[in-house]
Image 1: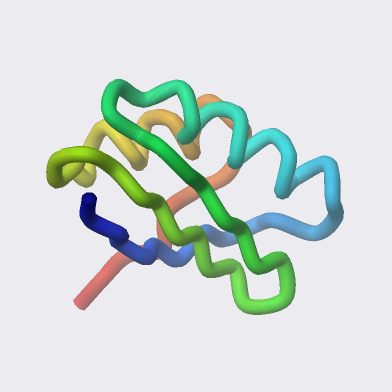
Image 2 (image 1 turned 180 degrees about the vertical axis):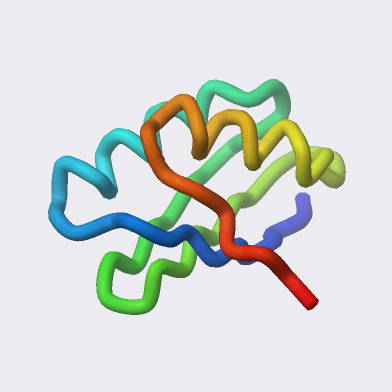
Length: 70
């Protein structure tokens, strides 16, 4: 198992949290998703490392955006 934390922008309420959790949770191999609304942090636990682009696409499908990493 591996946990990776991403930063998501645009979330403002519990519905946002639910949407992001549901979309990211549908990715193959994902076993858990924890979203911290206050910080925008999304911790994703998966069986294997996830492709960042796949996570970004799932977050986009939910209506939000992964923060750009330097």
